[in-house]
Amino acid sequence: MKIFVCVGSSCHLKGSYHILEAFKQAVADNHLEDDITLSAAFCLGKCRDGVSIKIDEEIVTGLSLETFPDVWQTKVLKPLGK
Amino acid sequence: MSRFDSHVQSVKNDILTAVCNYARQGTLYENIHEIPKEIMPKGSASARCCIYKGRAILSERVALAMTTKGAYDHVIEVIDIACDDCPESGYEINENCRGCLAHRCIDACPRGAIEIVNKRAHIDKDKCINCGKCQQACPFSAVTNRVRPCEQACKIGAISKSPTGEAMIDRDKCISCGACAYQCPFGAISDRSFISQTIELLEDYNKTGEHPVFALVAPTIASQCTEHTLSQVIAAIKVCGFHAVIEAALGADIVANLEAKEWDEKGFLTNSCCPGYVDYVERFFPDMAQHISHNPSPMVVMGRILKEKHPGCRVVFIGPCTAKKLEFQKEQWRDAIDNVITFEELQAIFDSYEVDFDHLDEGLLDQASYFGRIFARSGGLTTALHQALIENKLETSKLKPLICDGIEECRIALLKASKGVLKENFIEGMACVSGCIGGAGNVTHGPKERAQVDRYASSAMEKTIHEAIRIFD
Image 1 (cartoon, chains in turn orange, blue):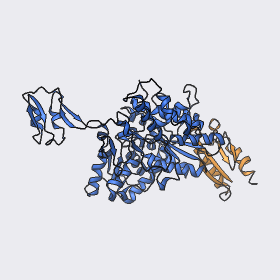
Image 2 (image 1 turned 90 degrees about the vertical axis):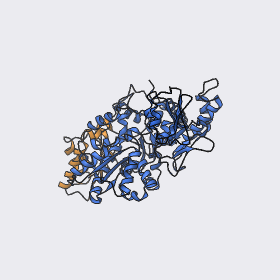
Image 3 (image 1 turned 180 degrees about the vertical axis):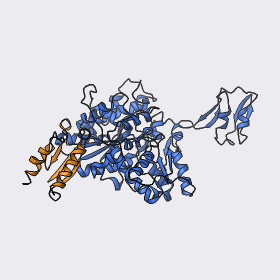
Image 4 (image 1 turned 30 degrees about the vertical axis):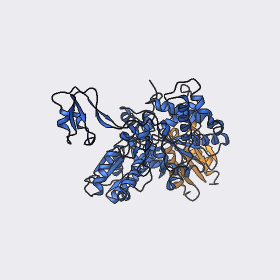
């Protein structure tokens, strides 16, 4: 699974670095280094609804540290069957 | 007040805008010969001897505005028919001379080239060495120096008079800084433009939805927002069809970080970010070229990152620099950048797309740190390098930087370094005076621009270089 976190200006200002860190931490905690590649991306085109991420081909918007656990559960762990 | 520094830029803008308009419709080639007639219709006044010559010059400008990537190995061109063959007689006594008793001019002349003839000073051209001391000495402003503006602008002596009188560029010397193009009062020297290719990239993305086009903007943009705010300009770039606007200054943060480590390892270094300067070192001081940082320029670094993160995307660098137009075509950087335009050309794109600046969304631009952003002005790179040493916990006390503002200062530093007598161990070389804010491709140049860049730099959310580049860890 490939996860891109948008670091375009709008998302960057909304704290995309912290989302990136949250993913990094979650990947480490769940020992999913072999299943997930994590990377920054420049602008996924959803500037109004950031922070935006792309999981494989699906774009997920509106991430914050509050909504992160839910997204991690439903969009990452569940599809991976974990 | 004109939005440009000079009317020459305004004429150039008319051409570039017309080229954009036809390129957008896909009918540029059919209309090459129509553009001069549209801009200079029958009956209009021309600064040239007649409308036909005026149009002929405009045709040359259209041709320059249609350059394709890889077609030429130089970007600064003389439009021979536009050149006014300016006089270049050097120092002369003018009518202000009062034949005074003190005749300080005579005393000041180191070659005894001045004598009083018919109660007025006279310069013997066979003896005169054009040192200018008589001009400094005369209290009546009675000494005029007639030099060609292009030759005056070119500090490396790449411009001379051709056998037929017009300006001629020595390709072995020219570093494509564009100073001559900016200074020529007749607009007879111009940079080639890839603007029609940029439009093709935008239209292709617009029609197919594939190959998104990223605008990679130089931090100098902060000095170019005279009519509109930075937010409006960023939003306007997106209105014209760019997928996103990215700060080249983030590449500068990366480069500063790498260059600090490289300097720490090697002990002596000079920068790779200014393509005019790099070209100058390679041409005039080839032995010093080994000391140029092995890191690519911020433009190339960011271009490669964008291509890696967004396969299939296209990257257009937008900046103040004519030499960048040569840099991006070089074999070793060709993978990184698809096209380069200047702020002058960006203005033409805005005009072509008729951007309504009063009704735009907020445009955001925030990725780089303060230190990446101040690369836009002289001294910024050195400050960033120092900061990167601190952030990497490297020794700063041994760093002895020399900030060279403009190619003349670079020449002196390189001369000393090549003879092993330079005290400093880091040369910051910028081909343009003031750094990028003095670049030939800017829409405006002004005394407040350094402060504008610094203000923009201070507004960055990330306060350190490592904070800006940690997203890549």
